[in-house]
Length: 380
Image 1 (cartoon, rainbow, N blue to C red):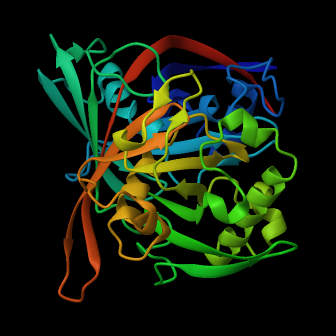
Image 2 (cartoon, rainbow, N blue to C red):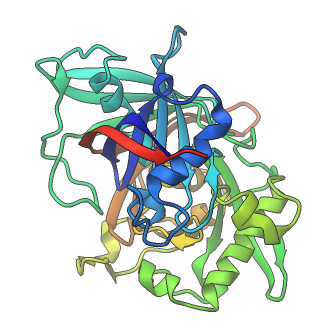
Image 3 (cartoon, one colour):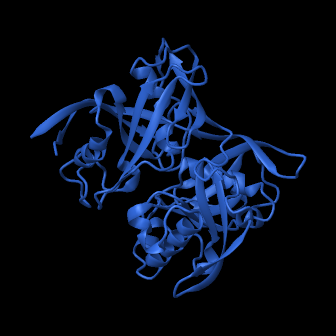
């Protein structure tokens, strides 16, 4: 038996997802995971019986509702739908999907447009954080066309500024969850490596690419096809998940904590070639990064990952801080990733105790409405 639900499919940044009004979904929230799995066609690597795009970045969802709070306009719950497993994770946020929440709120009548720029104040339910989306509008409608380009998306679109308020401790409650800029962790059957745990917009574990034998400029397909590297990366992420208190056994990481922490492999800038064959010169960016998403190499770089990387760059002693170009601009850190270069920044101050206080983390994305209508899912 099938049921229908109204939804809009958006591209947000370098991700795609289905957007729903919470009022259109079953009142019993325990039914949501099954509904989302069926809509995406999971678990199936091809997602042939659903609307998913066969990769983690195209198998996401946003559930939005109007808020009556003074601090924000809408509440937004992010869901990561696994492609090949019957798992839906509601832990953490997705900055790329979040960049389409503002346009969705306007398109759905939750927020009234105020030309030429409409501020949509978003409360991310997953992390209990406030995000300001500055959405270009014209004639009281979302303006999608523009001259802004982001790596990993063909063509040009209108720029959406995303500002995350007080992003520290999004999941763990602390900017440095362990209190240390660097920790030494033991990886079973491998040895000890250094890691920096930073939780800003999303919790990340940063490691040096060189410490696990990576060059740092590998493209996603090369990482995914490496039979020795892939299990090691998930083992490192699993140990990190244990250290941050998300799970008890690192072997359960892909099942019990598939989305957090994120794992990023950092290197000093070097010349490299992007996935589409573009040469990136050493001097054109500040830090080289690769990251993992749902046990696969991210095709580009997550927006929350960029914001967290920018946060890590300003914290003395972290692995990112050690590797980043010393002349970088904190408000516009340039990150080299498989698709090109992504800018992200932070506005911060140093407290009397010497600790870093991040007031805002900032990124720039584009979004586009792809489809509006009814989708059909199998009932339980």
